[in-house]
Length: 435
Image (cartoon, rainbow, N blue to C red; front, side):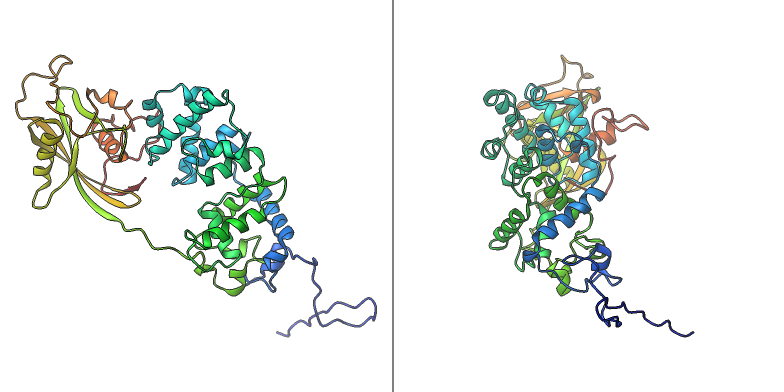
């Protein structure tokens, strides 16, 4: 088949055919023209020399591709604050579900400030890092006491709220109040490190400072809300760990893409060591009641309710460990009555293998009533205890692994426990969940 002749444009001055193709948009090609079929831009626009064009390309992309999220309906400071804290270490879909339920329960700062900590922790259950929930409650109470219930606009006052770090303060100030501040989360780190080819670990200096400086310089005056969300959205949807460069509106500006090293940015730091933890827990019953205890406020799982237990020591079987742990933590002498399987749960720095048992008191006595349930002789790992019914367990905030165990034992067939208030992580399995 004969090839078609290439038609070159005519020069209007000379009337001759030009052997080059003119640039369709001087200074900045469209996304399709910039990327080409190969996904590699035909020419590179150094980002530091084309910042206004970069900003506009990003905002135009965001106007079309932004996701419909509930806190984007009104951008109230309270909703922006809660969404930003929830989405730390949480996937977007899950965060949206928690946000909607949270707002139904605590629609404003006053309602949150008046809540009991137990209720706040219960609504947070499953998001992990429970100190965030306690800080949110403390911050709400500070806003009521020191700011007449009005969320402060000043970035320094926002930063002074309990639990609010530099990222969260910047996010609230820029998204809720249009302050010219950057939001540098993992998504933005990824975008900036690729565009400007930051060639050292992004969580460490000097890279962290370089990324923050570029992120600030990129924020356009009066458009901080849209820009910061666009940067985070781009990192979440396009400039991912495995980037979709052919779909990126910033491909013409990206140094890493121009050099073909986008898969080498960002430069990771030293991977955190994950420690395996082999532990046990026991569900002690008397009649229809189950023994639970409340952990101290400080430390892991502070103020959450749990079934007692602890680590398996060297040379112990899990059955021996759960009997010993119950004696040490409560003074109760118990027997193993059932094996409830194993829960494996991933955390940031450790991997939990939790052996679960059903227990009986060594001296069973009568069926349990509120009057005959015995008090533990000692409490060495808790501040409170309770003999609770399965229904009462629903109102107690528990660590994710313990909630999964409770759900597996006490949920009604065909119904996930607590479905009316919070999403669950499922029944007892040998799978992995990550807080």
